[in-house]
Length: 252
Image (tube, rainbow, N blue to C red):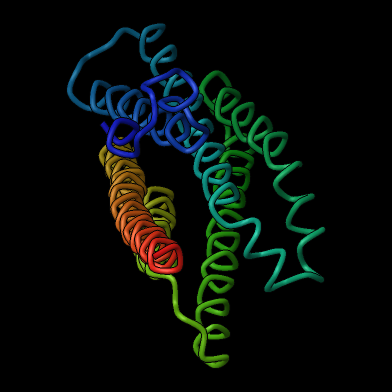
């Protein structure tokens, strides 16, 4: 629908853009993660089935974190380059290394499933909690780059772009949700095993809210961009009509 209203043909390239694929994949992985932990909570699996569900849940969790960071970087790397030139190479390296950190996180999650010892639990919580904190810090840095950009345009008396306002507001919401996710994860390490699966299900719901925020942000930004294009197109048509009148007047 968005492609048609933008005057574009409904093609594979127009529908399956990077942003659309990241949002869609994130929501699918959230559904998979939520299904795994809800089933662990309410369905009595035998041991081998419970292990398989736990492995799938760990995979979905790592995939969600990857998609989140990839989406955040796709939406803001140009602004980060402008606002934090000195930090940009380090952030770029972090984004490149992050998939390997997630692989270690996934391996620690699988290890704790089969080897239930205090050592493997410590490794699990260090890997998951550490990666979660780096994601939160990463998103805060991106958010600060948006705020810094908007402040700079305001101080320089430039017209503030409405789409960047929307992105900043949604970034604040998603960052707060990420903080709540980390707090819930820490809580799961403190409470007993009985409530652990319930808290992991809460984390899954919070991740779903994050990607819902991203989807809403894309819709709002799309409408703002389309409105700007309509206004620009109307001004061009008006200029063309004025130019035509001047040409006719000069001929007469």
